[in-house]
Image (cartoon, rainbow, N blue to C red; front, side, top):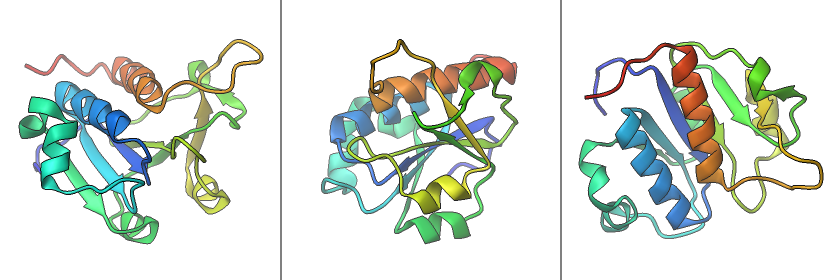
Length: 157
């Protein structure tokens, strides 16, 4: 990984869908964010598949794979901001800090209780009543854009 300080990182907890992982890889590369992939994944993830999922964006991507949730925690990557539909705090009330890690759960099951409890901040994206959730890649984009806006992070050139 690059040693240049980043305003923000995204972490994917045991992602299920390679296309969403690819979209988040592209998002991370375009915004200049570090990406953490917490395994196991619901699909085979190797260097060839990472390049394919990320199209031509993986060259500018700083990503790190963690063998488990425990390994991720041991890496001490920053304050964990969990995106969850079960959070009481809406995105508009959340205050992001430099170095935050936006943690996205599995598309099929979210995250287990131990992960929820480990999060320093739990936020939800407000939606219309009766709607379950947004796509994980779309949610990551919304959260990253709001966090970067709050942090007054300049465009990455």
